[in-house]
Image (tube, rainbow, N blue to C red):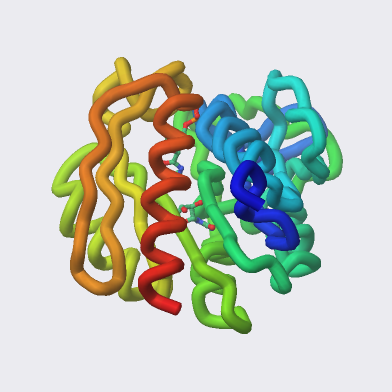
Length: 222
Ligand code: PMT
């Protein structure tokens, strides 16, 4: 149908931050608001897709008609995404913690008198985008690259290492765009070497443009 070109297609999207617990009351996280992922979910839904939104803790209302799976940690986000590897398109917009504490303290961590410095040991988390890139059966895999410097080189490395079909890069050093703001400005890098810059716009407006570009490419590549 012309007004619902994605009817019958399934899209899985990750959004928001993850939280890695240190003890019952403290955690490591970041400033992601979830707005980018939620607007993409709304955009895909408006085109008729079945949308599963795996969301870290955010203050946004669940988009109408979208199945929201609430998670807290990276581990939980990974487990949830694994249930939806049959999706036709996967968009990984969450700001996932790269590291998590090696151990969780069952009781509240205490302040000690013997030293002014506290060292917390961290270990790498599961890379959800990389897992999807390497273990899918025909999913069109779209990741983000949030960088503060040398944005394009890191984004190209992610495209290759994570076996994504497209990496959407945004510069998160600029407070007017990217993380926790209403607007964003992005460049899409595709596996075929082409790229597309999308000027600064509200995340809602930008999502529609991103989806249009992605659909053009999936059509071209299949
Ligand atoms: O939530 P908002 O406030 O609207 O902000 C949007 C955003 C800036 C968070 C979003 O546009 C964005 O860039 N999301 C990705 C943030 C990020 O973690 O980027 P990264 O360069 O560290 O990670 C690269 C990619 O791997 C991302 O697709 C990320 O979701 C994914 N990843 C990273 C680590 C990990 N353990 N698992 C992952 O899936």
